[in-house]
Image (tube, rainbow, N blue to C red; front, side, top):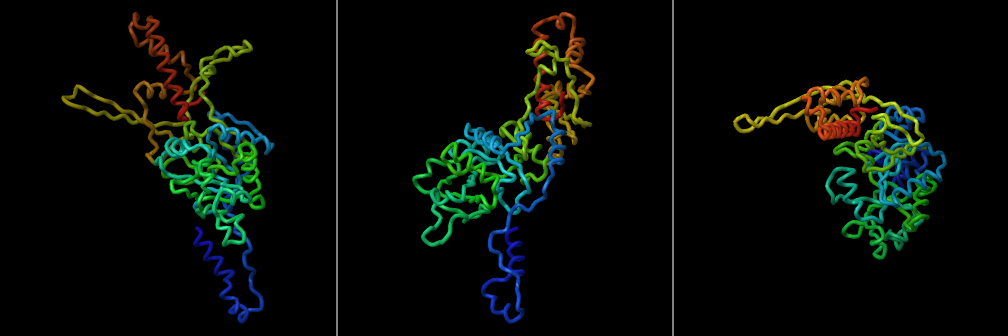
Length: 388
């Protein structure tokens, strides 16, 4: 991307070596660029588009509208200060190879253990992969060796996260999550004039911690998939992190993954004494089942395996053909009856009716069966196959 843009700039504006030629050929010439081109050139999704995607995913999300930037930034800063990982989706997406604060996963650079956690649990890749910081441009020289002796202005030396510098030796232990093994770091300098929103958030974190930067990596959680683009991409990637990303910030929305509400599923009394009617579990869309069998030895050991495909579910993953492995036959049977018209008690009674009278009346058997049904319903919910 950078080479393509550079070639266009060269063809349009030339350089100093061509000044004499331009003067002979034309009395006027286009002005040279005086500052870096904005990298935020992707599509700009409207409030209505973002809201529509959120509403479609509401069974799996807890959403809070926070219109105050100051309060929203405090929520974000508090989360990463406590060791959490957040995803930020704002404005137009970035052009080029780096996430620069509009489609980013953010964390605390002071916490070394986050390198392994984000790589293995969030990004699902090799644990040694390094991470980069986004640093306030006015504070960068205090933390990194930027060549102040040879350059006139180092305040915005790396706006595209394209430059590597050595972390100052006395600062390395303070930001281990963004300091490579050789003491270097590929930093992004963030100026208030260029990116006021991202700058204001990092300022909030700086005020709270004394560290003028955050760990920044691209917002994508599924191996081999690119950085998210649309609001729907962002919600899907967030859910596929399976809780390893604590918060998703989309515009003014602060979003958490909703836990499975067992009390709503069963219909229990609230703290105010009001009885909430039971909700029936419902599949997220049409579903395809596929069962295979592995036979070992003389045929006495037959091991069935069932997988399902549901293209309409939020976490559908086409890379594996869209298939999702079920843990056992019981989970498949439960998914099959989740039509929205059958309650948990109905499912329970169906299995009790298949047992002999003595077994069906055994309280321990009933407790085990009930627990097995609930655990599978929760798992199906967590993977967006059902809701209630």
